[in-house]
Length: 165
Image (cartoon, rainbow, N blue to C red):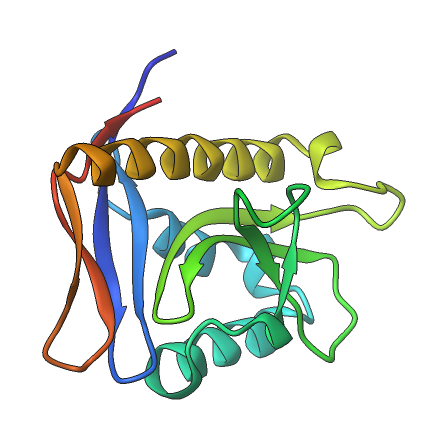
């Protein structure tokens, strides 16, 4: 099934700009859906992840110290947030730059499952971010997307931010 989506700015401040995927058939972006899902909100990792995302936007940016890369190599920089709280909660990002990130959603990975590929909601989020990364790189090369500095000094995508997957 093909779905249209846009990249929307969820938050932007001195640390970084966080874009989120918003499907055209949904009122909420993927990060809002993540934040509003009861199974996720009730997970012990929810508040540490939410607090760290806000800290990264406001202050420190999306730095490697708090990210685990999920796709082999950094050619496709899809990662998840890591916190000091042991949790099976997964929130996936595309981090091309510490001052610029895209959140693609996530979910709860059962403890007995070894990797995200076996959890449909997590696997879909990663696949979406890999597709988005490929499209963004292609569009940057063609001039359809630019990375610009915003008024806070962080970066953001500008241009054709409509996609289909």
